[in-house]
Length: 433
Image (tube, rainbow, N blue to C red; front, side, top):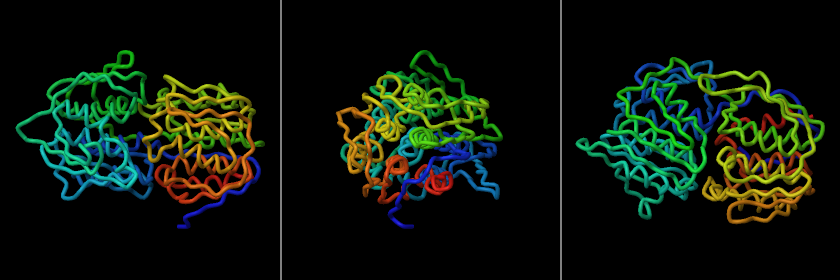
């Protein structure tokens, strides 16, 4: 595949897009199904690099996983206590979700395992996960004082991990999920309290597999279980984080009208909708329904004039992945947009705050990078530029929308979009007038 792609200016965006499966839910559906003992069929699974890393890891741990002719994924696990010691290192690729959630599962096993990932993942912090899992009795050894992978997990058959009461320093669905998954194998219950509620796909998936979940405010608690009761089928909703690029694109590019079908609108993920509507976007939610425990709908978006806003506090965990594309929206809005409390973006696939400021800056954008966010005065006019994706899928796709809404852009290493949205660039080409 060519390393570069050039997005040239054209007309508005129009048509209908069936949004690919939610990345977070795809990861969890495979992990939970692999811990059950009856077959599970997963429909609309996201066959992207990150989720395929999870598939590979669960296969190495003994789960039988196959794709059928209709692209459904069939998973047969060996039960909650049926995982096997892997013969090789478990490679999470670029996937932080695979790495962190699997850590929770692996500390409950009686065997030795080692996890690694690509160059980007090897530079992402593990301490926030290792700390609570060590408090539960997990035994880790890794680089630089177990702050980075590769990391090994050792468990004695005579020992059993125990539940904890843990107050998290930051809202993080990955850390929360790792503790919840570990608690399935523990000798006692766990309660996790966050400063704000992060996405709750793990809690919903636990309930789907028959585990009782207690919620109170920003706290969630579960008890250990003897087995998971698998549903026969899981339908993965479309990923609102993928839909976000089209929501912004159709809003800021004149003469656009898009329908996005089968989008997950879990309330812990809809910060993007709340912020765009506050900015003046023309988005309607139609045909609301449930896919299992997850709320889904069709989204209709038309071009609209935006105004600046402030994005901070409790809404940040509900749109953390969408901040790069919201930064693009802010460039086309009247007035000042302030993004705060987003320091988590500095430890994603790349330092996303720095990457957004740097690469949009090459296109002529003027923005102030702060310790925990960005300050953007709009509207601004962007010029054609050669930009780097930093091998970060969300940076690559945000740059593409910025280019389509202005005078174009050339993106280096654009194929990193395959991490979450393999058909993104083909879809963009198909909906442009």
